[in-house]
Image (cartoon, rainbow, N blue to C red; front, top):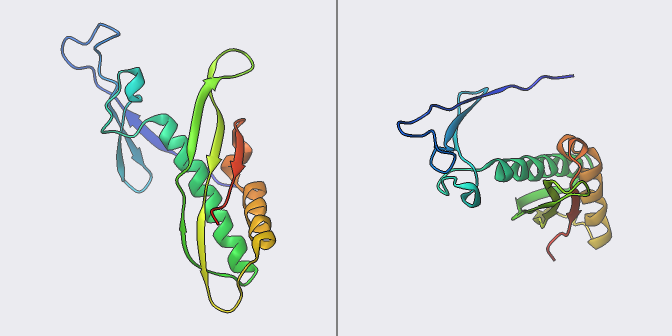
Length: 150
């Protein structure tokens, strides 16, 4: 199996002892050295110019679904020309009454080229296989729905 690492760093700014005013901004550094500015979401006094953890979770799931979809499509002989998604995560109270990402909606738009084109049933089967084999989907408790665009 594999191991994945990242690092995060936060530094207190001057006059930041008050919970309403301390900076939520921090830096995530990925294995390849890429850096991502992260903050809480704006609803929680975060910087809207930065990515927030909920967006990063959503991106991880959507990216994993896409990469798994592309692998399955290639194995089955489909030539994917483009893939786009605009997923949505819903932060709501879970069954225990705690805030959680409880629902995620993927809405992928996939275009194919070449002679082999999937019909609606084959496209749904590709997405079902992608969801069933996505590592991130296996790791979260949120309900995930996939509604491919027509």
